[in-house]
Amino acid sequence: MDLAHSPVLLKDSIDYLVTNKDGIYFEGTLGFGGHTEEIYNRLSKKGTVVSTDVDLNAFNYCKKKFKDKDRIKLYNFNFSFVDVIAKIESLEFFDGILVDLGVSSFQLDNAAAGFSYSVDSALDLRLDKSLKRTAADFINDEPEDRIADVIYQFGEEKNSRKIAYQISLARSKRRVESTDELKKIISSVTNPKYLTKTLSRVFQALRIYVNDELGVLKSFLNNSLPVLRKGGRLVVISYHSLEDRIVKEFFKYENLSCVCPPDSPICNCGKVKSLDILTKKPIIPTESEILINKRARSAKFRVAERL
Ligand SMILES: C[S@@+](CC[C@H](N)C(=O)[O-])C[C@H]1O[C@@H](n2cnc3c(N)ncnc32)[C@H](O)[C@@H]1O
Image (cartoon, rainbow, N blue to C red; front, side, top):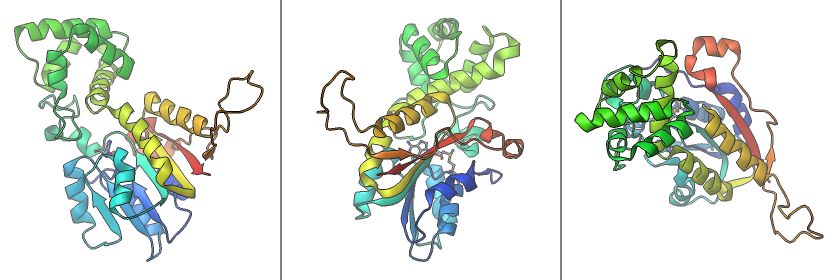
């Protein structure tokens, strides 16, 4: 694995997260273990970190890395199962919960992982290799309109229709199976000036779709509330506006104590305010962090406290 990976927004996010040195913390996006290790280092000998990654490579890497640390417990589960993991650990609550969404530099830079358009590999894009459908299955088997919608919705790419049309032409001759083949198709209808941006948008869209990343994020947020101790914090580091919007809306909704229509004479909705928002605006990296770590460029995090 590429050991040059540096965890994004590390100090600030963990400063917010850890409020009890003796507590039990959950990290849903283990990766290279950067955030997990920082949480561990802030805890006393009574504290524990429970971390998971859906990617088996990341899990195996961290199993080795943390083999001597018995207060770091590792899972190879989707983080949306935060409540299930609490049950397995016989815990009622975590003292804080963090996710650092998206993919790691290892996944992006490693050809075998198949996440990047900059290296030729099978067009896969599954974080969890037990999922049935790869990105290649999607672009070869779905109707052209559906492909255009996914590229537009999850990649915010204006040329989605043109790209989907070219994909449908190419696949009528033979299946599109590799990242290079898809890259060629996209290049054939994209101004070279915008090619890099378009490629990242299309690959991002396919990755979000194949892994149902937005659906998973929503489930995770819902499932994390019942297992977050009162006073505990939920920290979410995101990398694009689609993720950030979901987090912002969830925090806003959970911050409301009433959702009755404005003209309702009395409140009968039963809504309970369950989160206090600690970051009115998301926290973003400093210029110097972005200079050192280009993955930090689009990162931001929000924090809310369980009431
Ligand atoms: C940005 S990296 C995390 C880096 C990590 N915080 C570190 O400091 O090394 C995101 C990680 O989350 C994992 N991941 C993404 N979606 C996931 C999910 N739904 N459940 C569990 N892990 C997930 C990815 O496999 C990847 O390893």
